[in-house]
Amino acid sequence: MKRVQFEHSPIPYLFVAPQLLIIAIFFLWPAGQAVYQSFLLEDAFGLSSQFVWFRNYSDTIFNESWLQSAWFTAIFSTLVTFLSLGLALLLAVKANEVIRGASTYKTLLMWAYAIAPPVAGLMGNLMFNPLIGDMYHFMNSFGYDFDHKLHETDAAFVVILISVWKQVSVNFIFFLSGLQGIPKSVTEAATMDCKSPTRRFWTITFPLLAPTTFFLMVTNITYAFFETFGIIDTTTQGAPGGATTTLVYKVFQDGFRGADIGGSSAQSVVLMLVVLVLTVIQFRFIERKVHY
View 1 (cartoon, helix red, strand yellow):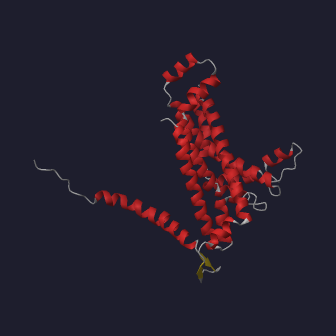
View 2 (tube, helix red, strand yellow):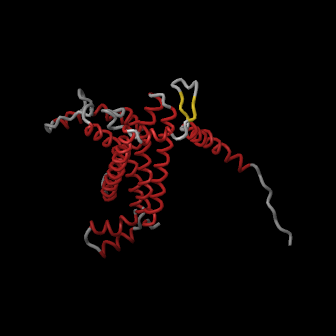
View 3 (cartoon, helix red, strand yellow):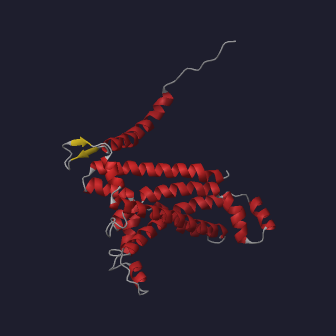
């Protein structure tokens, strides 16, 4: 019996080539350059460089301002992730129960999805402006001396609030889709077996949303680490005293404003390793509890 062999066509490779070229130019080559530059000490004008091995890494890890940024990034990412997920889940559950005017209600909750983080930061900057900001006057109406330009806690509150508001709409869309994907037969059977809505949600509905929740948790942590750069740059710029400087914003500050290419490259490599470890932990330990 003659064995059939298919001819190899170059067409599939031609279709994939543009995507591979984009990945190589915009991801692999910059990542390789960051690793290479992290071992160099350059002058401010980039005219000369010296190979210094792991000196940039030791200067980064033992630097007090970097440790402060790492601590703030950990708290900031945790609060943004859990607050945006929790609030979006609550709104999605309530929106799923709305019968009259459901489309309007859902549209009002989704429209913030189209706003870019820098624009959200500009809107938040206007709302907390000491002269014209309604939120600024509202916070001070309780007798508390709110000023995010001077107080570290207030500045952290502002960037966390704006970041959560920006991300809630994205999480809301996914949670609402997940809730509407649950078969009605399951919810009707759960209603017959359990009369308490709260217990029914945590024992039936929420476990069925576990794949959606896990996916959103991974994307929200990535959002808090990287995509909030525009919000911080347009609101506090890391002030006061570096209290709201995240790790990715510190890479920008030291690299572009401080002209410390080697140090900022070492910071970016460390940040990449931190995110990689977090992702491995999430898929290694948390995904085991998710049932698809």
